[in-house]
Amino acid sequence: MQFFGEKRRKLRLAGDQRSACYPHSLQFYLQPPSENISLIEFENLAIDRVKLLKSIENLGVSYMKGSEEYQSKLEAEIRKLKFSYRENLEDEYEPRRKDHISHFILRLAYCQSEDLRRWFIQQELDLLRFRFSILSKDNIQNFLKDSHLQFEAISDEEKNLKEQEITASSPSLTGTQMGSESIYKIPFADALDLFRGRKVYLEDGFAYVPLKDIVAIIQNEFRARLSKALALTARSLPTVQSDERLQPLLNHLSHSYTGQDYSTQGNAGKISLDQIDSLSTKSFPPCMRQLHKALRENHHLRHGGRMQYGLFLKGIGLTLEQALQFWKQEFIKGKMNPDKFDKGYSYNIRHSFGKEGKRTDYTPFSCLKIILTNPPSQGDYHGCPFRHSDPELLKQKLQSYKFSPGGINQILDLVKGTHYQVACQKYFEMIHNVDDCGFSLNHPNQFFFESQRVLNGGKDIKKESIQSETPQPKPSTQKTKDASSALASLNSSLEMDLEGLADYFSE
Image (tube, rainbow, N blue to C red; front, side, top):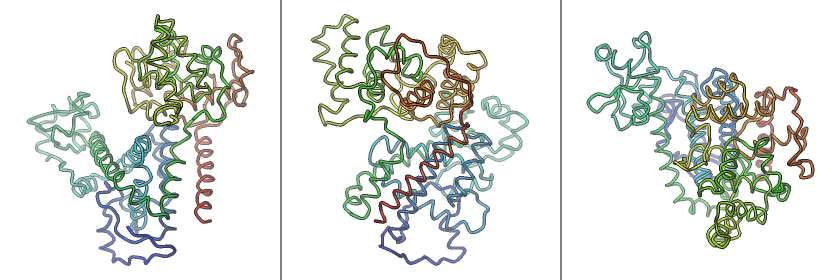
């Protein structure tokens, strides 16, 4: 791709050529774009793609993915930003071209770190799932062929022969659905997730997968290809960054739109050590409440737990000196020698504050990072309770928090549907006695600060306003803004940021 300062020469393609370039609204982005574009268009395409991915993220934590409301609102966002989304619309060349080029531009911006890659891949996967869900059966088969996925629907005769076995092995199917459902014969190695969950029929090295389940396999294939592509892009990044026209834009994109990092900044020193026990039950998200309880009971946490909890405490305002005192006091209660702590653990704490090693000032983990990476093993307490806990143990834990049976069932239903962040939002609403939390949750530290605003009547946390031994009054049940209002607010804020970005690069 080449770039020019003001104008680019428009490609003039006949109808058949335009269709051949982008035969589907859904793409695997196998080939990078090869045309020339202006720097202005480069910037506009990048900004619109970021708007789309941020909308996908916000909708994903405000509504259940795949629900009718989620689908309709996402379609409205895609239409507003003029990206492709349906197969049978007329003159889809420009939206599909925009989709193709903007995807590759953001690869350049989001290949620079593991966190950026993880965020980008997750939003692109959700976009792919949405587009796949509205494809017709004929278009699905054509898409699979064009994407070099060797998945073919079996004949009606073969389907009738294996109907009983396939129906019994596929929870998403019932006998009445079998006649109208396409069944795909897929190599066993490509359907390991379904096999692991006992959700597929296997025979002679092949999995017989219903159309409803094939999207999971396509997502896995897309994730693997995109992960590899981002790694290769990262290797080539120095060449791109040497271009003074592109480097500021790419750096600004990658640092501005993956959400707030909740580093200490103005919060340092606003929390005292005496407040932590009280705050853990009132304002900590379940993942951090679980870690704090385990630390107090066992006087020790393994490395994964120390990292997750330590960076969270740093983000809510603990200073380096407070963190060293907090961990040392607790570990000594576990009969650890103070000298052993100083030699074996204090370095890691200083390292997380950017005072040792590479001097990297580490930021607290986001929900996405906690859910998708470093799952806990036996004896660990880190991770996301909604993602990593056994359902029965999770139910017992929620019962110990004195939640109503109806509320517990709501949370468990969300967890069963893999809506972990929405389940955490429901936990927030129940523990604060509000009808709707009014925000899209994507970070444990966001949970904490939103909790403090509710408990303090809309004001930010103040050290003197929180007494560790004084019970807080119950917040009023005044209804907060609904999820739609929260999404509109987030999008409005994003619009302002993006306008600032455009002004920044037009100077």
